[in-house]
Length: 457
Image 1: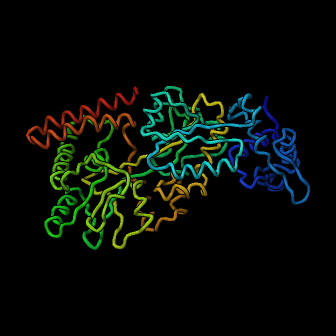
Image 2 (image 1 turned 90 degrees about the vertical axis):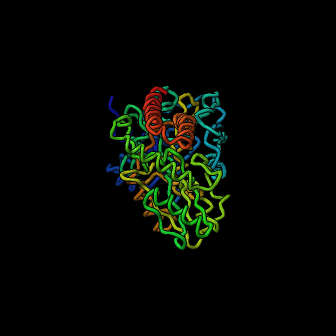
Image 3 (image 1 turned 135 degrees about the vertical axis):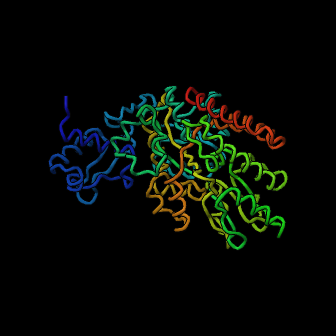
């Protein structure tokens, strides 16, 4: 039976309350609600009365307004369209503990601050942070969680195996849409046209260079020649802190559906030539797969160029260095940059999905996002380019790179297999360049097989 308009409005307001939309703890005035939802004052008043009868709001005359009882709101649940159920055993105690599983290498400090603010705002919910070295391995080992942070490509696997809560209905109720996000972020949360996660952050590789020492190289060959020339002339060095996967795309531009086409052999050949040239000219003991996430160990006085993931630039952004600027990663031909994302998801078997959703939404609030920006943890919303404290030049560069980047091809497990399998092939090739064609065949075959495995993973 179709609900009356005032009942539908009551459901919508309840869903917004649960999602944390009214951060001041009050509903807007009746006239504001009537105007916003295009209903008359009587309908708005009846909707609020429904919430008052459920104990979700308390109406006060005068300036007191309509105050929200957040605890009661979350015990009642959300709108019927969201299908969040409240565990009755937890409801009786009015205490909820959420276990949040995440990659603990970069974000622990800002997450600790965010969880403290969250508990202050929602005192009946406690966030237990569960840092992991590799999230997918922790899940395989049976680590329990209510909500978690995943790299975008992994959402497909966990949704396929019914481990994630379907967020499609609540995203629809709250008006989320593709146009609000930068390209290649939105689709990484989908499985069979259903949403199982929400975008949290993104990053891509960039080039840092000292403009007093050298102009930014346009290609990887230029990069290699520049660092060789500088080492001979003034002892300056460069650092490559991006992995093989980024080089694969920026040099070879490998489409997923053309991994084995003969026309791509020349792209792979160019990739191998560039890699060999880079490895010969890089400082002794430095390899492409040595890929730390920060610049703490770099003496910028001894370097002229550094290729690094933007998410590893916290020290550089915290303390700007005169003469150093940012540029796009070098390219070869039609090569493209790779935009990696992190998403937030809720465990399908969580006893507290409504509270878990609250936590996910809380992490995307603009004021909470400020805690993560110092870790170069970029917001996936297009509006972040306008609101960010980054310099105009950096924002323009990142926006342009994001528009033209490609999404990752592999899951986190696929990436692990990639690095474990490809590097021995490269080392063998560097020792014996005569095996070039055989090396290309093996790399192409590995990428093709890993793509199939990822579809089954």
